[in-house]
Amino acid sequence: MATTVHDTPFVGRPPKYKPEYCQMLIDHMATGMSYETFAATIGTYRSVLYDWEKKYQEFSDAKKIAVEACQAFWEKIGMAQAVGDKHYGKGSTASWIFNMKNRFNWTDRQEVGQIGENEKKFKLAYNVNDDNTIEGEVVRPKLEEPKKTDE
Image (cartoon, rainbow, N blue to C red; front, side):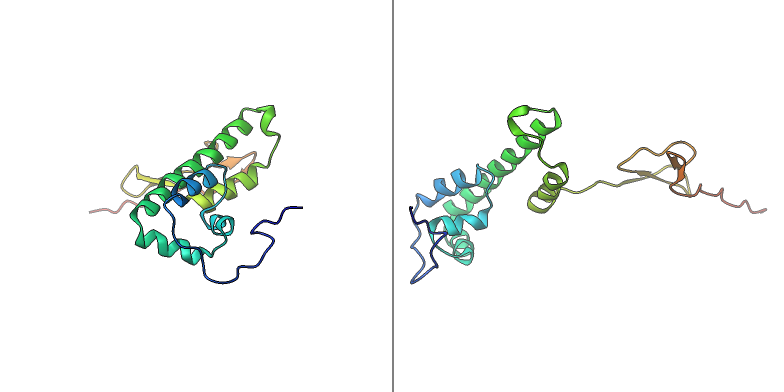
């Protein structure tokens, strides 16, 4: 059985920076793996990668490209699962969403816009019926009309 760097503890000095690590990083992350796991691939620590980013502009640029490649990998999986591509299996929508939110800063959007003087419109992740219910359950109370004052 072959031994990989994952099977052995890190000993000695971290490896010295090599320009070929740039393409290796891009290739690594294009398979969906994280930036930090690249450290294990080359037998070093993530802190060394962070230092290289600051010291070597080409490595910093490679990281930016690699992150984009990684996101593209995961978006393709999400799209394939959304349309039922049998090559990707069923997968887990919840875990895919969790992955995208945590790794690529995806968020659920809440848009707030002014409708009237005292009213705000909320765009929710689900549809709310005109009577403020979802399948008969009250989601939010109706906004009260502002009181008119006699002037």
